[in-house]
Image 1 (cartoon, helix red, strand yellow):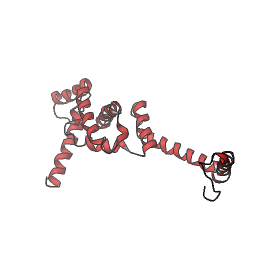
Image 2 (cartoon, helix red, strand yellow):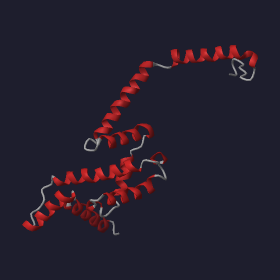
Image 3 (cartoon, one colour):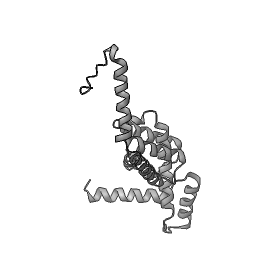
Image 4 (tube, helix red, strand yellow):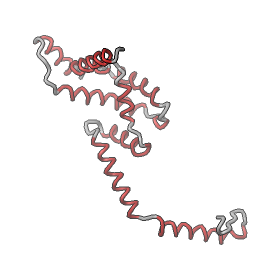
Length: 187
């Protein structure tokens, strides 16, 4: 603007100024914007997003899309923040009703929204993620070799899983780890 002495308020020079600005755009797209570089960045971005998405292959597609969208647009690993909050929930692995998960999602939302304004109106996805996280984490721990206690207790543990999708062993593992951490750090 200074170099070509453009004055956007001079209506008599409007046509000439417009032509100079169009030439700037033409020069930018032909000399400065390298389409190969743009394509390379697009391919790299798709690869990165696909790699990120694979972490959530056990989740429903809409939850995957939500997490990938946040990562792509806001460059946030929001799942890590959510998981960190869930680790503070002592009874998380005993949750089994929608109201349990809904209450937990409200608590998480209250903490997360302070630093993540983009979560406004996203509470339903947060709820879905938390519920699926519970399921995925419980399923992973279902594959463990669980000790035999008694026929009745082991049957009760299995029935609890089948009826409520609550993995007692996941809860015991989490609770034991909390206990060990408290004793280790003197809390």
